[in-house]
Image (cartoon, rainbow, N blue to C red):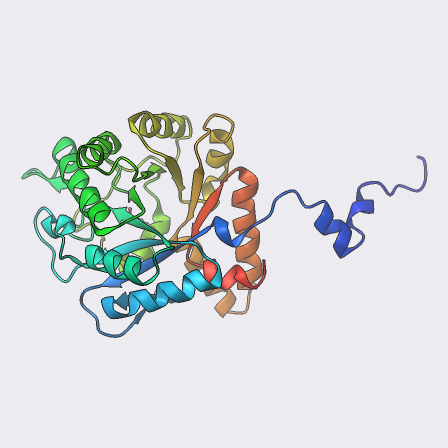
Length: 323
Ligand code: PBG
């Protein structure tokens, strides 16, 4: 053995050296913050399973978005929670519904913020499913796509900068792209939830968006989490149909999926660090077991290291001061 053994530690000696040779960086502009706007409340309400995350009434969303944008986060992902559920969720494409109103208000008061709208039916349908259900309880693919395209169009008309279909019906990106194009919204990008697994990590979100399925589960449309090859098929299908960026969701347990897509997909890949990831870290830190901001920062960096371009995270504001 030749001494001394020191080799790899040389570049780790000081903070300056460590920062010079850091491979991957997280920037505020990488981050997208989800925002919940509810039609049923008049003051903001904390989501019990997501401490620090709130549902906002319509009157507060512009102010909240102003704070987010001035803090340096360029983009929000908007979820609407309507007062009433309907059989096919027809309020989802009503121009006077909650999301459409919120988009108009936000774009009026903070025109430069990028408003991404979640396009789905599950918060609107009586069944709590992301598509239309027939008498036998089966989710109808093509009928759902037609409705989802109307939802996306209504968001674009309200002023959404990007529409983000999260339903996982086959072919919905194509339906949305052609309707947007026909109606003069050729320039509205589609950020598709292309690779979305039927995950157990969405539990807290379903409290936040009041969208738990009333029967069964989402396994006939969301992906089997044991599968990785399918991720490429899902991403490529959406890109061929017109998606401009693709989301992989959840993020933390799916870094392998992000890393395997990275060399194959040249569109932006967005990691969605979902509600369950947030809640786990929050809960552990509230027990004094981990340092929430530092652990969160480490996981967000791991998503970029895996190859994600941007990250949707409930912690966007919390990690800013550590960047
Ligand atoms: C709606 C939707 C869900 C999430 C985003 N959009 C829930 C689901 O598919 O059941 C989950 C987000 C999260 O857990 O943070 N389809």
